[in-house]
Structure formats: C-alpha cells, structure tokens
Image 1 (cartoon, helix red, strand yellow):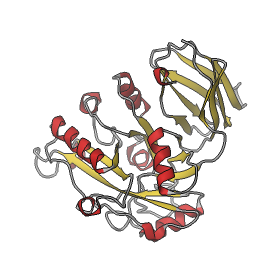
Image 2: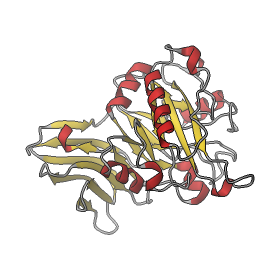
Image 3: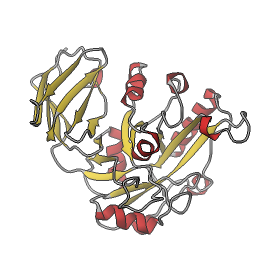
Image 4: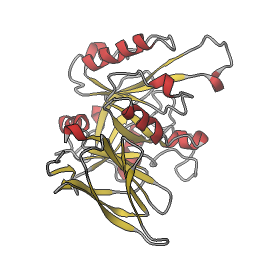
Length: 323
C-alpha cells in the first residue's frame, strides 16, 4: 500500500498547553489567576481548568497570549466496599473539554455527572455519548492511578483521548506513564488520541521537587491562539504529548516516515504489531532525526522518543488506512 506524501506534524507553530488542572474552586491550592500567571511564566499559552465536578469557563483570563479552555473533571466510582476503602477503590475519571462554551450554557453549568454505578459500562458510555452531544470532548484519565486494568477500560466508547502521562500521578506512585494502556486501546480497534498532563494541585511550592506543575504537556498546532482554532486542532489530532523533549516535524515523503526532534537518545515508531522501527544514538551521544521506510502494513504508527534525562514525548497514533 503506497502512502501519500503528507505532513503529520509541522516543524513549528505550536502552543504549549496543560489540559488537566485544579484550582481553589475544587481541591487545588492556587486560584485560576495564580495558575494563569504561573503557567504563562513557564511558556504555556493554554490551560484547561478541569476542577472536580465544577464546570467553569474562565474567559476573564484570556488575553492575546493566553487562552482558558472551559472544562471539568468528573468520576464514576464504587462505594459498595464501605467506608475507608479509598486506597483500593477503583474509579473512572474523565475530563470534559467544552468545544463551544457559548452554546447550551444552562445545562453545562449543572456539571452533569455519570451514574454512580461502577461496572455499569452501558450507563457510562451513554453518559459519554450525551456529553459528546452537548459538545464536549471526553478524555479518559490516569488508568493506573485508578487501579484499572484492560478489562475495566477496553469497552469505553466515544472518547476523544486518554492520558498517556499524568505528572501528578507520577509523583503519587510512579504510575503516571502508561503507554501500554494506550496501545491496548489502539489494538482493540479504538481510534483515540493521547495526552500528557499535569493534573496539578500545587499543594507544595513550585520549588519543591514534589510540586506537580510543569511536567506533562501537549503542544498544539493551531492556526492561531483562538478558542475555535485550538478546538479544531484538538479534534484533528494536530498535537503531540511530552514530558520535555520536542518534536520538530513528522512527515511521510516517498514512502518514508521522517521524524525531527530536539536532541534525544532514542526514536521509536511503534506500530500495531510486535515489530517497531527504531533509531538509537551511540552511547553518550544524541540524535535529532530518523527515517523509517514504511510498508503500508503497519496498521497504525505512533512516534515515541526518550532523551538523556529519561523524559519521553510522542505523537498520537496514525492509522495507515487514514493516511
């Protein structure tokens, strides 16, 4: 199968975003205004404010260099095991990103929640479908922190994305990075994107090594820093996730997948099957590009890179049938 030449990710024109954030409106320690100041100071242009069960659109924070996305985080968990069960409690956490906060404002302000029946997948999927209908993009959050296995999440439907990295969860118990869960969803036939987020609560100062801000982000290739442009880019998957490394262009030319990055030690092109393409730097050195001839039989492909600090970045999955 011959693949057409195309740019999968541009070389420049990205906006840095944190799409999972908590403030004093729920259980965070900083106000929305303080979050804006802190994140702008670290080069971010976009923050989705995902306070627990509290839909908010902080339009008052917008300026020519900053955009607040309307959003909230909700959950479905089981309480049938009784009081004091929190350390062992399985739960689904979902982030909902509003694609047009000027529409259906009254019902969105109710911060609708899924039914509180853990294991009732039909009801959960009905909720996701209803939120999609209302205009939300739905993201499945931190499966390892949620103590979930493939059996818990394989039947989820209607998702825009899932978290592949959650910086706060990495601090909690070294279970923030879960690429295998993303691959399992892809191999089950689902087409969804991957996000790296902070899930920050800022319960310790920024100078503390356990602070949970500025560790997981997405770089969004939007035409401009405007609500509709950013949502279009998110819907289309024109973004990549990262803990630090940069992707500086991904394209297909003459049947070859071409990847450009900041200096890294490893560049992998993971695919549906067991085999993957890889380019590694000699010990003590770095690389900034790789080329992988494609057969057209890969099923799907996603780029994943690692730098000398052990930090990762990567793309969404690209399905060969769509290229």
